[in-house]
Image (cartoon, rainbow, N blue to C red; front, side):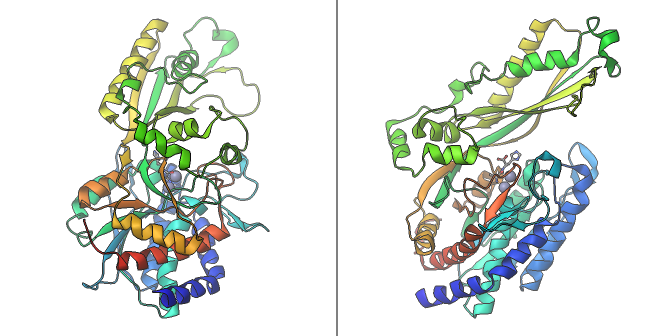
Length: 478
Ligand SMILES: C[C@H](N)C(=O)N[C@@H](Cc1c[nH]cn1)C(=O)O
Ligand SMILES: [Zn+2]
Ligand SMILES: [Zn+2]
């Protein structure tokens, strides 16, 4: 295998500028799934990706997902499914990624235009979606192209599933995966997802766990319209005041969730699990570097990792309808919608979490004796996932990491969520591996998101090398 991989790696290096150009084209399409007016761009991105795959020789289909639930005027963006290779003597790997991105505005504080890939003198490639998840998705396409150009036989059959709604809770995809598990995806021997990050900036990792995400909104309404606070202040129940009381009580400044009973749903920490954290290559400086400050909640690495991986957290995201522009407008908002989410962990069942959340908010609201109207809703929920890393899929990826990066990867869990991971595992019955490309300082979801050139180019080598090692692994279990 070594000469083949050498030829492939060389080809990746010589195509590096072309691969960066491909990423620039993808970043230039503002495929923001959460913004209704951007939906045509999300669809355009799906078609662009399909065309790129076709030009590389893959069989591609754009599968419609129907209307968006609760927003029937909007079509969901298509799922791009593709097959590259159909050799019965080769293994088949199913890869998943997403071509939608988080919202981004220059005014949010970006140093460069978010939808223009901007490379600085240190090789940092800034742009929305660079690391989450356009760089990794294009990594698979680039791996195909470099094999073709180098004349190296592609070692496996590749099935692709690229969606356009991941950042909005993967609307519609669960049913699609369940339907296709025994059809389009039926040949898959294992699944690989590249959509998370290293823990630091130096050491690669393989990831076998994710937290779940239950996302809620609290709507408080009262007055028929926004009011003058001089004329009506002190005479009416104010929705914003009620909302702030409720939202402010959900979580303490120490990160402790105030919802009674939630902690009882969490799997107890065993001695065996506790012993795993010490060996992970992660320092408090890694945390401070990616936070951009020293505002961590815990002084030590073990508790920080546990807080990220194996305990739930509650984050308050924002308030719709509130006065958030600069200035000093004296308005009483008539209706406000507060948004928060809970990252869930083993053994929290989403329905149990919902019940505790609704009961707590309703009982706290009752204590306010407000005449306003409260509505609490679940926006979307995705369950946590923890798998066994003792599978040939992980062994192959471990060997590929050692080959490309010269170091054994850490086995990590991830604080973020990719809800379809569990769906892929359950619907196909196959092992799922998370193989990240980007690093902890990439600022996914934040301003100035970036992917380092080195992570992108070596990441393309890694994805290709992983497929070669997969082809060599003895098949021991499904
Ligand atoms: C880890 C992955 N790249 C990611 O960013 N996932 C999102 C998924 C999500 C959940 N609700 C909405 N989007 C995340 O963890 O926030
Ligand atoms: Zn992602
Ligand atoms: Zn994301």
